[in-house]
Length: 130
Image (tube, rainbow, N blue to C red; front, top):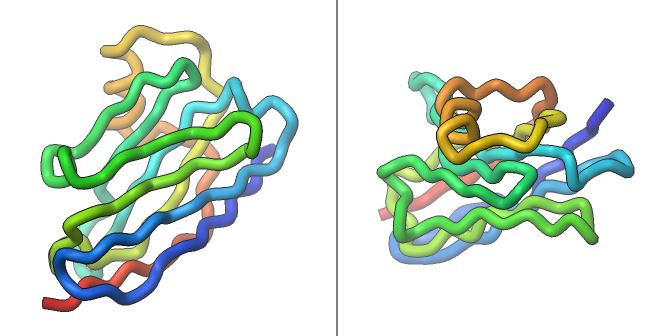
């Protein structure tokens, strides 16, 4: 069982930055693959970024070059550095995780695109004003 707790959301103006954090329970954190997803009001959930257990990262096209995902195995933490935020980034952001085998880059992309994670946090709200 994995418990995930997000933090770091808030309100910023367009062009600003936020850093989201996700604290994970469990002592085999290094075998987790993890990701960030978001859901805006009236819209479907979408993948933002993901990292495999081996550090392979994937990003949604809409955030490439602006967001950076990182995983700290020593701290059992996942981060999402968000720069140059835009109003369309406004959403509830969720941390997700699951136990994953070693996988190829294409397999890691597949997991991200399908959102195949069994564990989800409660979310942290990001609001970007113009």
